[in-house]
Amino acid sequence: MEYSFPRYLLAKQTVDDRALNRSVLEALKGRLPRRRIRAIEIGAGMGNMLTRLLSWNVISQADYIHEDSMAENIAFASRWIPEWAVHAGMQMQRSGESELRVFDSQRDIRLTLQQQDVFDFIRSRPTPADLLIAHAFLDLLRLPQSLPEVLSLTTNLAWFTINFDGLTAFEPTIDPALDDQVVRLYHRTMDDRPSGGDSRSGRHLLEELPHFGARVLEAGSSDWIVFPQHGSYPADEAYFLEVILHFFEQALAGNPELDSRAFASWLDTRRAQIARGELIYLAHQLDLAVEV
Image (cartoon, rainbow, N blue to C red; front, side, top):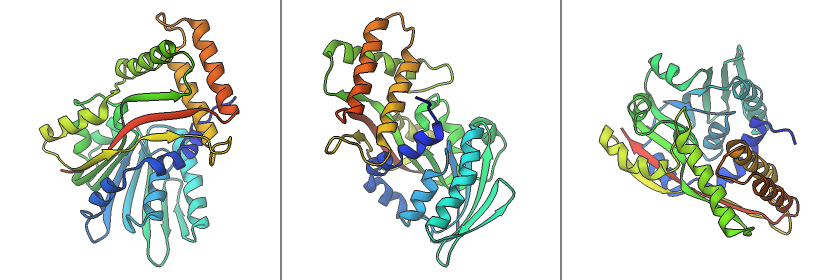
């Protein structure tokens, strides 16, 4: 199977829609300024969060900076967001590849797409935002060392969503000991990643943010729960599961603590479970609404 990261981001959109904690979102929404805002999203992927915020009537007037380090994601967003806007009944104007405007009688978003490493972006000293968004991203950074730099991007509010918090489960069980070993070793790769990462980022953010002058307004679980219905998965969630297994395969290939044949058999069995519409996948995460 060929693996496309933009397709993965699209496939997980319905998973994220279910997972995002609405109490946390309502706490954030209640604090947003009643005027045109400046928003910055770091690690923004191909634009799912912007389209979600428009669809859910969270923002309507904004200058929105969409930052991502992957050129593939920025190129995809440049095509996909205008297509989404037209499908949603909005108008679209383009000023080059990186400047877009999507609007209708009620909504007006001026969007800047910026392909840059997040810390290079921070060092460029962009004008701080009213709202900073980091979606399924902070658990890829060094915590808490990165927090002062990240928080410098806002003078008001932050919405930190889908922060992994140390629990992964696949059902049905294959071999309890092997299942536990695979998950434990995978979590360790998050913590040992040279570029940074934290397999318990959710709880650590709750603990560390106040040390940097931020106040957690609301926090709540945002668990990924993917399960079959009548032998199949909704939307493109079977592909989402295939990519999750691909992440496990990439991270654990050649791990000396893991029997390679047993792991290959485990992957084959899990993929067969997806094909039969049997695999259940859970990942525990936390959302936080933060005042800076």
